[in-house]
Image 1: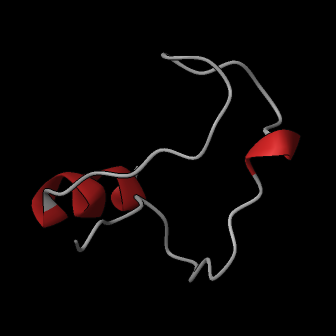
Image 2: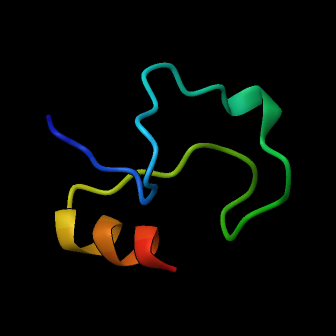
Length: 44
């Protein structure tokens, strides 16, 4: 499965234990299967 993260950085080993803030669905590393959605997030 290919997933995307809305960032301009390549993240080879995400560390979900060190999220720096509570996000919409709690702490974690968010990904999407929708490339366009990740691209929009990376632009913000």
